[in-house]
Length: 484
Ligand code: SF4
Image (tube, rainbow, N blue to C red; front, side, top):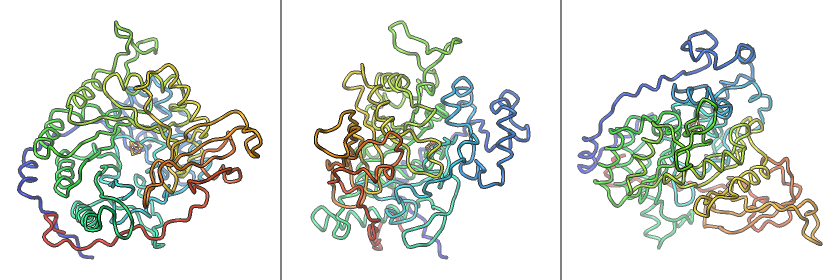
């Protein structure tokens, strides 16, 4: 197989890239359960798993219920220090045998590969999402990219089976240029897919902050050169290893902004629980500042202040609501208030997706809605921007409302209804605002669980057929600075 030609940066990119420093980071990561099975974990970390837990996890090794076959274990020293005093964080990062009791679920939730025009790029809405790395500093047990992180084989739209690959700069920038040229030539929408300009790209994975600065910088500048208007970087590193947001990284961002001032940048952080960033006293309670606000963990506060104080970028939090981690209105209330106070927007809370073993992690949809709704009581309007979203194959939907009362005269509403609203369509022209109303099912954790109680479906969530052609041909770009 021939390799794609090497990407060649423009002189402007190169002069930016020449300024980037790559310090080494000492995250003190424990990678895999073997360290605990074989007594190789540092002495103070050895008790993180009890003897019974170790025995049970060892007994599953090599069977179809092997927890690390589903999702490898990984934890940083920083997160261990937080988790040892937090049941919620332990649930987030510690493997447990109940994860694999029910292995129902999809290896490609949302048929994401249907939207992948080139390897490692998902093109949905006016956005692209790239897999730039297949790991993070630590691994969340509920991760909905478990198939990428575990390097599993998945089925593509054409029926072939292979591991998900990572995106390559040349291929992605060629695709962006080609798509946008076709959109421009066709008056604003793509002639085949009907989609608009690809104006925003999310660096994802895995966690882009687990890459060296030079790799992050190479993506930022190449995308800027390709005409992308805004770049997001999705990361949980602020929770796993806040010292990663150091002077070298921040200077790189500043240089990027100086070089490409017209390109927006959003840091999409991922905090699930206030235990990830608020300091606790010996009594296990959050420490209050003299004015009644809550004290942040110093390293995390330093990192957060450093990014938020760069007024040209935005910081937003988004997180799933996960059983045993943050299905707790009080925790979510504290988190939304504390984040907004330091300048972090509360973007989305998500219902868990239908990943393999999702029944171990997903909170019923109606419960998640109640938890979020409850958590927002008493918060101010600006603190409650977050919505509850669940991603359907068709696109992103919001769980708008759950009612308790029947609608008089309307069959199927005896126990109340739940209303989904389409926020964005994944493939074609926007269908935003259309709703689907279903009779309540308090046990429902996925759309399937409402299949027998659909009352009204202008959104078309329940007559969905898998897309057959979203992938646009990738023309060869003559003279592209991307080179491939
Ligand atoms: S940080 Fe995100 S991508 Fe990484 S393991 Fe957690 S959920 Fe998955």
